[in-house]
Length: 209
Image 1 (spheres, rainbow, N blue to C red):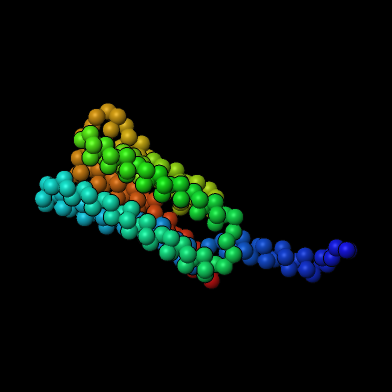
Image 2: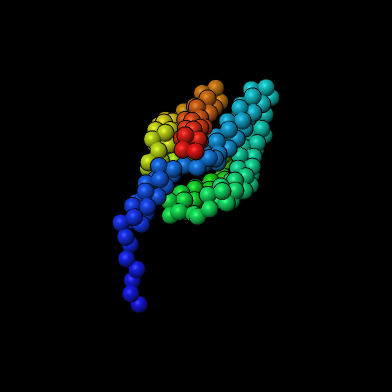
């Protein structure tokens, strides 16, 4: 069977549509998942910090689990809505989805290990969760920015990673992780990593409408 040849008009239309898709790589709401995680982490962190200051009860730290529970439920729901609104799922979308799936699996695994150490051996390894949140998550954010060619994700991830390096060095040097400086550092890092890039992405999406 003879192959159909593309004439000049069709080839111009194909190139034009490819350029248009490239310009509109963001659709409205693409930054919503980042914003959800950013504001969720900010709210839970502020709540834990406040309650620790008022009650000095370490049991308050169990509230951190709300981040994984709420975020773990909201993310697939929001991702499904975004997929429906976008229509076709691109290769880039698949890469980003798998990247954050790995991060989510790592967060659950780290939580379970810390929980087992606490319940069975009385070992407090929960500081590892701060390291995970400010080392692994920033790496994923930077990779996300590289794939999307989004500088706000890259710079936000680098600032978060810098905070993670400071925190890791303090843990290695057995510096006491006082809530008075760890909590503000953690909150600022997530504002840089999630909230600012999320708003930037949504702003760029609105400009493309």
